[in-house]
Length: 443
Image (cartoon, rainbow, N blue to C red; front, side, top):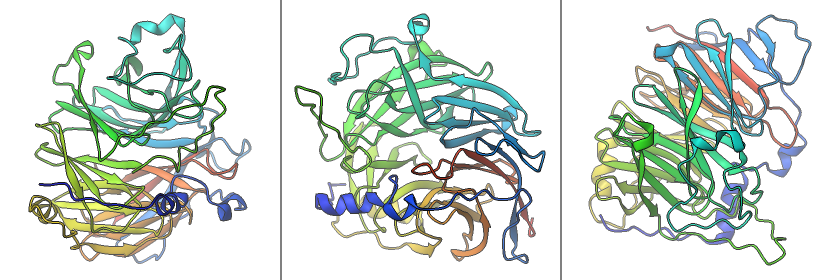
């Protein structure tokens, strides 16, 4: 497949992102919404329903329900990952620089993983070098920092949890190489830290746990890591792959340049997923239009397929379909995966347009598909709600209130528990982890 160029002026790219990961002006004056425990979705007669049954929050110390738990470890929770096999879930608090671990069955706090690295834990690092990248902000003690966790994925049947760091704490502009850590989920301790390119966000693992893909929001690159060994010390980078053009940022001699990395991020690469056969990685260009295609075997960028709505944030593949969340305008799109891949391989400049679309509300962030493939759930950030869509006809069938500005979510393997994080914006809302029970009348 040849490269299908997608050229978007810088101004347009900035406008697209302004409604995305970054707070926009209208939201700065928004009111905090703290949803009551027991709230249920509407309409009541929908085939699927959501009920808020538990919450961990760092907003209100005095609560009226024992299911509403004040938890100081929850600070700017960005994402959540459920590990059903070990009856756990992991919540990553970006500004808190920690991961909170809870029991899935009874919601008891189990552990807290601190992403802080001092002189006494330098053994977790195998070095600081990342390909041809250099550090500008600091020249010494490069591995002494606090990491800001963003997203994560499991590998080796849940034995390890990989967590990306938005930036190192000494790098306010997120222009230096950042890092990721690997947590042993038996002990809930960090066993290795690896460098990355600037500002990694999404991370994904192949179904065979042989390859990890790390997508860098900061400079239009993604990396492949060989994890075929079960020994963490044997894992190694294969290649750092540029998508169209690698960005470079330079501070001035007085280090006074302030870079807006929410907007100044090129393609702002976000959604990342392996195809079922593990031959390709698909990456959404949130700062432009299209899905970048990476050949895993050849370790090569093949091009970009356009045709979906712009400002694509999240990608999911499930039961033969590919799903996209379109953040700024608030849509979820669905297409047959085989049709999309066949189109991508045709060497044509024509966009792929065979999408079914449904409007769910501005600020569509993370999406998950139920284990049976019948429903897709969306965290609708700007509207502070969770939306359920029937995948058969791509129509909204239920909505439920959420705490202000929901962003991350995951669903249990039995489809009965949906966990959602609310990160907050501009001092409003956030600091909340909501647990919904999902009931399907047709199951």
